[in-house]
Image (cartoon, rainbow, N blue to C red; front, side, top):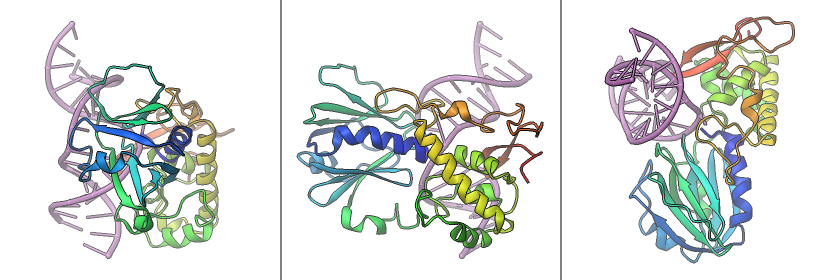
Length: 277
DNA sequence: ACGAGAACCTGTTTGC
DNA sequence: TGCAAACAGGTTCTCG
């Protein structure tokens, strides 16, 4: 599901419904998602005001007064819906968390595969928490520079595609945007990471930033489960150059190659063997 | 210590 | 048509 552009789109959708709003009540309809909810989860949230809605990697962070942050991850199939007051909707089998706010509005978290999570962490120690401690830089920040990418790829013995989806290398890039960034940078996903440093790393750092920015501008990519908080779909899936386009003509002008699918580290990789080297 | 593969869970699509 | 296998945006554990 959701990679950085989708999570960022969800963050932007949640912000107006949550920032400055008070949480009235929280209902959990089961004991866990990917991990158990923390002790007294609902009680600790009730009455809190959301001071800021942020994102780190693929995590959504609702900062609360009182020093705690509600950490949320969409996993593969997680989705938030914002329901206006009176917009009744029968609870579905996979509606796991319901949050009432004084907006007034109801937030519903739905996740049929349950790879998502929700937990609470102390805001002051968030970066040292085990969920965040090992994360690499944000790809849209200055810290994700060609020099940084040079240094980190040089030490890796994996194909560059596997390195790109490793959250310790860069935070927020997943399977789709790794494929798309490598296509834009004209780098083969099979190339060993250690052989990328140099001009290729420079192209790759720029391609990662560009594809993520383009996808955010399009509201992310909707394949199966992802939708914005208002139910609208993202549009970037229409602009995929290689992802999920096995057998199709390579879109690069004058290339004429055909997109192929291979499996790397158990995940599908799509690329054009003719122009990605 | 690092990297590959399996596991987690459910729904949908593909293939025989 | 029907059933089984394969596959799906992520993360984390185990094993070699």
